[in-house]
Image 1: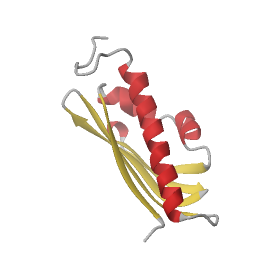
Image 2: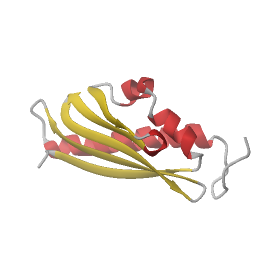
Image 3: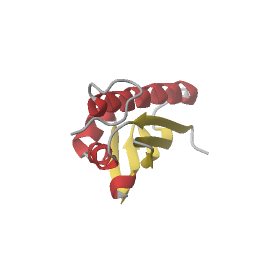
Image 4: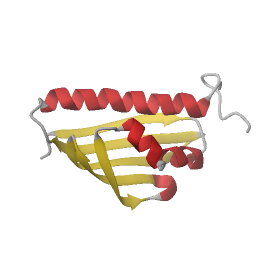
Length: 123
């Protein structure tokens, strides 16, 4: 069993193709996870991406995009072991908080000025 086994979700009111475009952008990966090297082992187009990871962690990571109502559920999975001596519990908490920051920022970027409780704004 890996030292870090993390599952998280976020909901974004945006077209799935728009969310997928952001999630599939390697420039974003470097900004989101600067201490990890990601190697795609499955590009699932609008359904997300799966990676092998190395660097500060070694294992696998996935962002799965699920259409839901007028938006997308972003499912995030991280299964990895630290490559340096750290507390797995501390590392898991730090990675969970980082995931929240990443996907809430993405939510803010894609939803823009959409009022809470409203559907997608016309383009």
